[in-house]
Length: 208
Image (cartoon, rainbow, N blue to C red):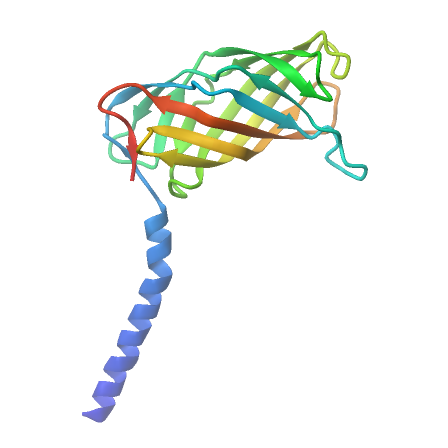
């Protein structure tokens, strides 16, 4: 009887330990809703892109980047069945101006819709990612970059989603790089926007 009780106690402790390990990972994922709905997502806040012109310091690179008065406009579709991925399509173009070491530059951004972008809630509301980012960047009147065209691409990470404001914010979001023809170096890029996307279509999109 005592041996049986000991075995049961050991088994209960083991199950509890496994549950403690498994629960955080299960709780971290979040799904978009309502399923099978289409939304118009705007970006009413300004966007700030910071570009590391020298990714192999020292010396430390001077601040450089460009800012845009407002962000992209997306059509979003919530997948069915329920999914951590929400599909985004955009044909937005943005006019931006250089900042810091790129001051004086005019920068045009063209968001490429393919491959299809997606808002990824797999890591939860405090680390929403934008997958398959692809932006054509054109520099004009730009001594530092010349009149050239490059591409910002990657997976933008570090977004914080608010169901209250129905918006996604980035503060120095990471995972993007700028590449240009003839340059072998991919320059790291971070993004800051208080409302990178915001839902304006009822029933409003949510992430739980």
